[in-house]
Each structure stands twice: as C-alpha cells, then as structure tokens.
Amino acid sequence: MKVIDGKYEVLREVSVQGPVTLSEVRAAEGVTRQVAWFTVATPADRQAFHAYRTALRALSPAGLTDVVARPGAFYAVWQPVTGQPLEAALAHKGVPQDLVENVQALAASLAEHGYALEDAQVLVEAHEPRVAYLTPLLAPRSPEDIAARNAATLAPLKGARVKRRREPGAWLTFIPGLLLLGGATYVGAQAVQIYLNPPVRPVSSVVGQAAKDAARQLTGEGFRVEYTTGQAAGRAIGSVIRQDPAGSSTLPVGRLVTLTVNNPPAIEVPRLEEMTPDQARDALKGSAMTVGKIVKVDGTLTGTPEGRIVAQLPEPGSTAQQGQPVQLMVSTGIVGKKTFLPDVRGFQYEDARTYARDAGLVITKVTPQPSDQKEGTVLEQTPAAFKSVPVGSPVTLTVAAPRYSAPSRPAGSLPLPPPVVAPEPEPAPEPDPVTPDPQGAAPQEIPAVPAQDASPQVSAPAPRSVTLRYTFPSDLPQGTYTLAVRDDSGERALDLNADAGALAGKQISTVASVQGDAVFVIRRDGQDFALVTP
Image 1 (cartoon, one colour):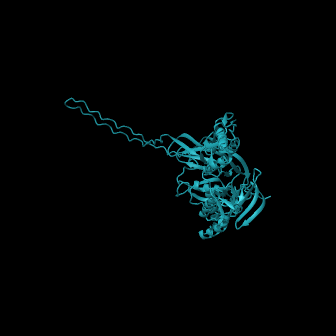
Image 2 (cartoon, rainbow, N blue to C red):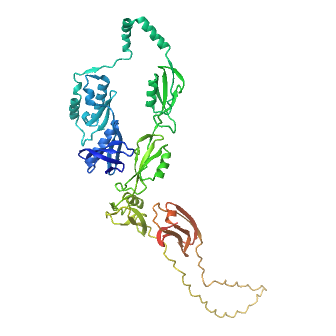
Image 3 (tube, helix red, strand yellow):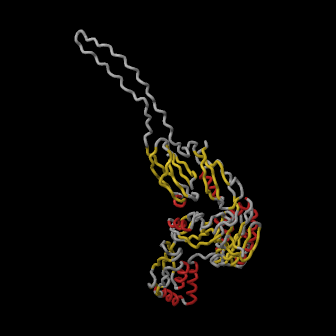
C-alpha cells in the first residue's frame, strides 16, 4: 500500500490535475482525510504551490488541517466538513439575508487571491458558508474571469426572494393584537406571573467540559450562557475552567450563566528539525509545550540521519497554545542514497563542515598543511568535488596551517667545542733593581693584571610557563588522542590519553614549563592531528 510522507496510507486516488494528485487517505489516528500532493519538478510548480499555501493561510478554510512544505514533500491535508452544498442553499425560494451577505464576503476573499467561488467546495451550515476544499490552480485567474464565474454561481439569487433580518423586538409589535384576539387581560396576567416568578432549577456543573457541549447542556436546561476567557495549566484548550454561578446551585430559568473558557495566549512554535527527541523535549520546556506522538519515517528523501527529527506538527514559526503537544516525525535512517560534496576548496573549515552535513557526509579526518593562506582554509578534499558517493561516506580535508612549526623530532645534543689550550707564559723579565728614593719615600706597588677566563660561558634561556587552551570539534574523528610539547630542549609527553568520545566538543587546558620557542602537538593514533602555538 502506498504511504504519503510516511504517515498517510492511500486508499484511492480521487483526481489528478496537472502536478496535483488528490488522494483519499487514512491518517495515523485512523480517520479518513484527503491529501492534495504537489509534484514539484520545476520552479513554476514550486511557485504555484507557494501561491496556493498563501491563499490557504489567508482564507483559513474549515476543511484544512495541515499544509506541509519541505524539500521533497509539498502537500495539503483536508478533513470532511458537514453542511449543505452552496448550490442547493441558493436554490431555495427564500434565501436568508445573512447567507447572501456571507457568500458575497467569501467570494470577495477568494477573488483577492485569484480564485472564484466554483474553485472552492463550499458547504453551508447555519447560514455560514464553509470551504471544505480549495482546488489548486497553476496560475491565478484574472479579475474579469473571476467576475464572470462568480456571476454564474450567484445567478440563482437574481429575482429570488431574500428573507430580511428582523430587528430585535420587532415581534413585540404583534403582541397587542394577539392579546386582544385571545383575551388580553387573562394572557397578560399569566405572562406577568411567569416572568416575575419563573421556575427555579439547579445549575449543572460543566467544569471540564468543552465549551460548546457545556453551553448546549445549560441552554437545554433553560439558562442563558455567556463566555469569558481565562487560562489554567494542565487543562484542555477550549474547556470550561470556571462557571458562575457554580454547579449544583439553584437559579431561576432564563438567568445568565457565565462560563470561563481556557484560552491561554498564543506562543510561537520553536524549530525542532534535526534535533533528537530528547533535545526537542528540552527545547519545548521553555515554550510550555510538550512532545506528542512520535512517528517513524524514512529519512532517505530528506537526507536526515537516523534518530533525527525530519518534520514537526505544528510547523516551526506557527502559533500554538501553551501545553499543546507537538507531533514529531523521526528518521529511521538513510537507505541507499547517493550524494556529493561540492567544491569547498577556499572555504573556511566551519563552512565546509556545514556543506558536508547538508550533503549527508561526515568529516572524519582533518590534516593541517603549512600554507600562506588564512589558517583553517580548505586546500584539498576527498572525495573530489561533485563525485557521487553513498550518503554517510567519510570526508577528508586538508586545511591551511601557519608555515612555522617546531621540528617533528628533537635535534639532540650539540657537540661540545674543543677545549681552549692556554699558551705557555713567557718568562717574566727580571725586575729592575729598585733605587731607593733619595728623599726616603717608599716604592710604589704595581697592581697585578686580573686573570681572564679563557672560555666564555653561554647562558641557557630561562624556563617559562606557557598555557594551552584547545577546544576539540564536536565531530571529532574516532581514535585515541595524546598531547606533547616541543621546545628548545626537545619533546616530552604530557598527561593526555583519551578517546574521541570523551573529548568531542570539550576544551582542555594545561600549563607547561618550556625553554625558548614551544609548540603543543595533539596526535590521533600516533599521527599529528593539530599543532597549537601558545
């Protein structure tokens, strides 16, 4: 059996008109619906669908339950509507004035969006025309065409007798004559007696019932009903949350009962697509909404991975009430679909990752390569641009890294210079005899020349502390990751040895004491994964 969008079982095809196929389907809750499916193959088809959806949103037809627009799925869902066909209602000898005015208003609304009355299946209930189905058009009708078609539809009204509305209280003008003919004194006395002393009845408790059912019950008991709105958490929308007077109290027949109907303010539905159901529950908590029914659908058509949300009902951005459940369609995975990666060379890594995700591919390896281009620019890609590969295939990117990097292995100890051999000192000349100062002064002492170290000392650079802060990407390839630091004294391992699952999306921070220039090396399964210069 054919299934539409993974949730509507096709019972039969009703009609085919251009790219639109109308089918009778069975919905998930077991009820019968009609689905107008658009086969969007050209830009004109897409434009026709969006014009149709715009008209539906403006008209709010009674028969419309849902409109879906996403890649590969463009359709509208319709439910049955009760009432008398418009042609039969207009064919009566006496057409109520309210019906005439309401039909004319509907015709004007349809004409604003390029539709005539004959393009809509209109049913009349209690003088109110209701659109049960709107036929899609490939192009809007011209105003002249609409006017001509509407004139033909409304032709039965020409020369027909229209029942005018009676003004409130007009029937009272007949009371004096009736009283005179039937005994004015007796009937008048009885009427006054009944009015002044109406029978007293208990008021039924209708709290918790739907407003329409509660009003029908109270009016059947002889009471008048008036609505007012309020809000209460945990109560169904449109249900009665209070009544005045309260249930079980007594009230004269004809008196007013006020019902407070639960109608919380509308809120905007958040976007849940591509989330998991657990993430959707957290997102809906802030909007006072809940996760409703979860339907499993094939994610091949939309390229949605298994366990991710394909679509939601109500749609994101639409208005809903607090406490309203949101139905989710969750992907069962992608089966046998081909895809391709566009040419992402020259893009930044984050942009390239977005393209890969949109194509249903996974980046499993990123190789840095020294380059003059901006750091993170994609230099090479595997698979090649536009090559057809299965969905879910791995992608390898080569990205630009700064040209400077520390040596991959320590340089080792440098050879020591040969020792300096000091020359043998020359024999010191014999000192001249000191001639005493004839005046008896003591001889002056000559200071010795200070000895100089023959081998100059070269001081090593002073140690310094450097800090590493690095955030691993959320789509970190599988493997075991280690950390080392290189400086002028060589390379040494640091305290990191963890799997990708424990590091994806996490930030690490460490402090190391180094000499001279330093670089941190992050390795995946022994291969360089990233170089970080502090």
